[in-house]
Image (cartoon, rainbow over all chains, first blue to last red; front, side, top):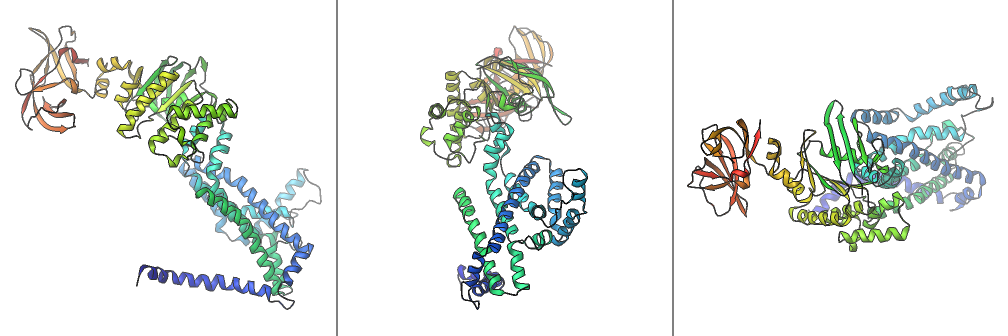
Length: 272
Length: 347
């Protein structure tokens, strides 16, 4: 038996699992989406010609981008600070960032529901401070979804960036300072470009996870504000219209893949 | 081009004092070396001039202006790091243009001109489109040098820039540094632990030891008149032997612990317990002679020369000799040295 065969044999269990648990269901879903009773492309036509569903698609993309952007805006400074503080404080910051990951998403989201509900802490406080009107609500708004999702996804962004930042030679920043850069210019011209692979990786994680997120948007956005994942769920459980659900899943899948392509190209060009 | 004045600089990290009140006047256009072993505070002092490190007490003046509280970008300096610190995401030309771009010096064409001139100064004009990681260590070094001189800074700070290079490249770079300094006349502060580098490059050497200035002077002064035991040991790694000076019939004599005596110059005024500093390259050895006798322990062949390690009065003694002198281990040899080249350090 040669090396190739040996390697193949070793990889076999993993490959089998992947095929059975991943490719098979996805393939089935693809098949399902084109074998409905109304004809092969009917569910896609229905989705793409209905403003309601297009709105859901647009909202999913828009919120995912916004969530990714906010995660980056918070995650980058956080990761940068983590690289500059002493090892003890850094450990505590990492623990703080990871801690939310140790409870279930459902529990965390219920926490936000308590905080954001009409009589919850945050709307009450804003009302008391006179910043918002009497009818102000946060629950079942897009804002609530964004807040909840940012908290869920921030660790992925911060840790992705942290990994890259710790490998940047601190002398480079000092050198930039001696060459006339202010602190912020140093961040812009030296740290950001060098941290780009981490930012890209973190953004990919955030975007794909938030585009396919179901629990948090569903609980915080309610039934009125639906995202694609929730719409798929509804198609399966309420109607139940399996071909239509499958078509939506394919669209979600294709949409995410479409966003990934330029990202992968960008990082590929930098590494190559 | 500007002068630099350091006034009683003190620096402590946590509670450990690293620099104890260092004052230094550096003239415009001077090439000065901060020389010392690792941990003596020389790099810290350089970083204080750069503004990368704050002072605990004292003041830094560049060109007559107090810059103690100013961040590095407002000091009009350039620094070359031991690790070169080239920006990996920029090409060679962009790296060299970086200080011009950040300081807003000239328009695009002028910047391109100056980048080209600086790269040609270090003979790297043909590599301007490469990325730093595609260059050898010596080439990266030259890019770093070009980047440091391109903006014609008031002060050029060099932090052990040659220590990562192999011996051959280091010699070339030394020559290049001397020529560039002569051409541009930049006030230069050079940090090194290598005494040869300091001796060959500088107008003036400041010898640092444990956060204090041990001695300061021209290379010739430092080399020929080390003021302290540390200075003579560090520069030229002289042998330091405890001795007592007596008035002999033909002038003063130094007597070592085992009773052997070494004739000193008649002008020597010190008496009593002292340390005698004998430079390795000043000692000559012979099988027969009437100087103090030492026992050979080992010979180290250095190619052009031999180094003999001997013992005299229980102390190790090293001498550099021509490579044709051949003594066996354990053989007794006679030492001779020009009395004028014996340094006496009073205890």
